Length: 408
Image (cartoon, rainbow, N blue to C red; front, side, top):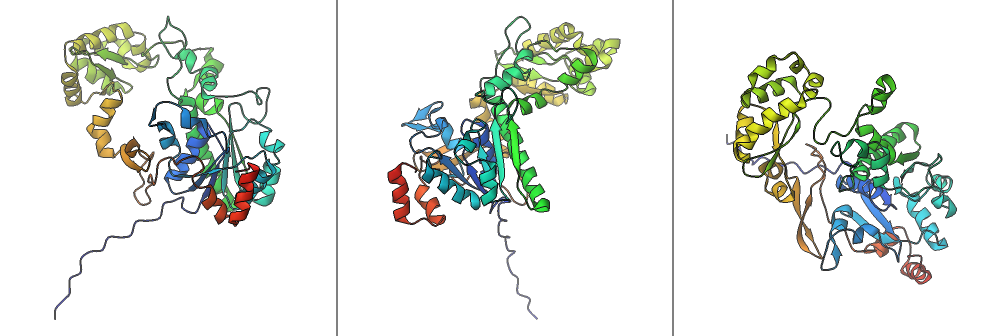
């Protein structure tokens, strides 16, 4: 009896985990839109709503190529783009129609703006009780600062981040990128998924009130607790840490820079043996991070002197052999060349109809069974208006009438 051998079949790729989820992105600059991008990366149908005559300002932020804003290509990826003037009657009614079929709306207008347009939670939840409305603002929906304009820079200042960043004798220092916005975006995506999970039990949507000043305060650590219990206010320490040492950036013999961290006691001991100063390990103060931090000058001199005698490659190889923690200080050119980033696929190439092949950061994490994907980069302003409104049931004549009114 002959047994027929069949080639093993490759299982069909699983559907993205958020397929079927409809998200309306009404937000601009940058926390709200980035949260929507994260949802879109894992399959959500994200519809980006922009004003017909005032596109999302991120389209004009930073460098452009051939008149095409590059930042938007990342922030707008996996989103269909439509235009609506929400302050107009036609725009309001159309948005309510879209909201009736949506799962999530992300917005970042100042508190009271949607209500003024007749698009507040009362109206939205009436047309769709299962809707999750994520409201991302600088200071939240209530309180004495709620109506102030809010940006990530203000959160970086007010959270205490800037006050502990910089050299001891220098000014408070702000990050040169949207740190607070990015952290708030992560928190918003998490909050939305939490609210959607709750909906499976309650059957109802709810409002997410995300104040950008709050996630930033959460990530700087136990500073409120330290002050509450000890009256301790952390000063600026540059690249040094008040919690462990050695921890700094050090210049190599070939003019490069490396960063060393010794948060674990065993790593600190390996570093001091590597740099030829094992006697310091026997000092009583070396036994914990706090004690080492009180002798930072001694430890920085020991590590810095050794690293200054070696090239970056030599220092990296020696630390790796000693199983000690070190990393080169990269700029973006180094990131693109790094074999670990390449192995992970952290930066990927995407085909863009306007610019051809372009590189950008890949999706934020890897799922073994239902991975995310970049299906397309940011699309032109209003490119999908007719298609989305047709799906809503509007006829070509009705879309044309809205366009004539300036509502789309």
